[in-house]
Image (cartoon, rainbow, N blue to C red; front, side, top):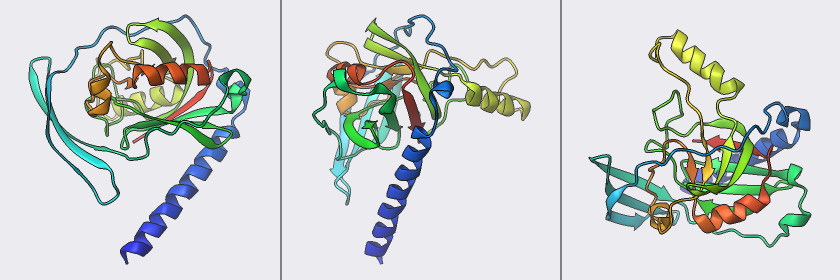
Length: 247
């Protein structure tokens, strides 16, 4: 019975990925150019977690590492349980200078704590990633520190960010505004709420790779990866690259 369920789930995931990639590459360049690159932006420095320690860790039946961590942030003690997948570290040899950047896309899995890069529908990279303190929640407004979900594009690239390198996403876009206005109309958000912005993919402060390895979700809604990985990713993507963030 468990074998049949596992087989069904694997087939379902493959089908989802196929449909997902087919949808991505059917979108033409006019849709990508709807949001101009604008000026190079950066985010404001965020508070760093302190006194981080691992309370417990073990592997689940799929080989994923389940870790309970505790740290202090802005004077508060926070405890998190994270599941870190065992499929991190994929690096297919490829020359970024000869790639067709229109055939690149980025898939961010918040529940799997990773960021994957696809080229011509095949995975070429998989990096560990962390997000805002509530990774399973979608971003609704400014200040909620959640990482938004859905389709975005890279709006511009900053090679000298406060967090090593920074790739700004076009959040908020039309879908973001539609969700924000719908929630406001239903009274689920304060009438004074703002939608927020300055969400992107970036590295981490010098010596901060442990935050990524341990799965500490400390950002204000951005996607953070190790500096060596942001260096690599920076060469693979361009302004207009499509990014899909899912729970």
